[in-house]
Length: 149
Image (cartoon, rainbow, N blue to C red; front, side):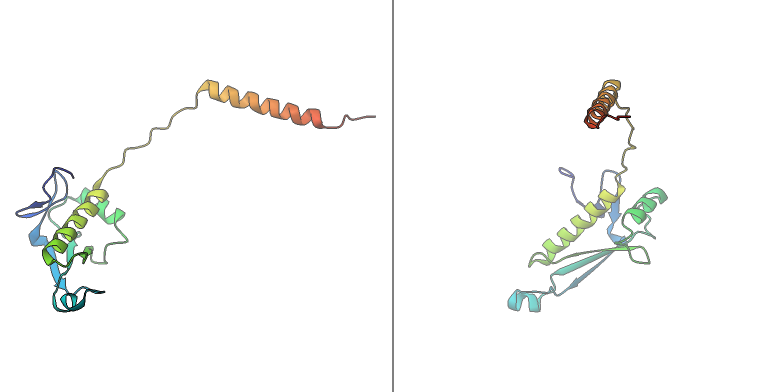
């Protein structure tokens, strides 16, 4: 994602072909938890962004299936993914961080992994393995006591 602009004026850019429209996002600000003194007790700097994957018109059915299967543990029963940021004191920076996390999460879920192409073991390696087995069994056989009648 280096070099790409994360925020388009109308949405969040996930990759070259996908932009999540801001109209599909639910953004909430609340008070952060933890240390911070008076500032944290008075300002709503924690940002929570929700995006409904199940009803989004920004993605096609294949993308929806990929996201739903790969992010199943992060989706609610209604198909909503929730991202929270409360790293900084600034609401704006927390919003940017939450948007970036959402974009990265969705981008990772949409990566299609290449099919593994099985390779054959080289003949020389197989012959070396078999000759090593023969040597080992020969060594074991030589250690046995000779059978006397």
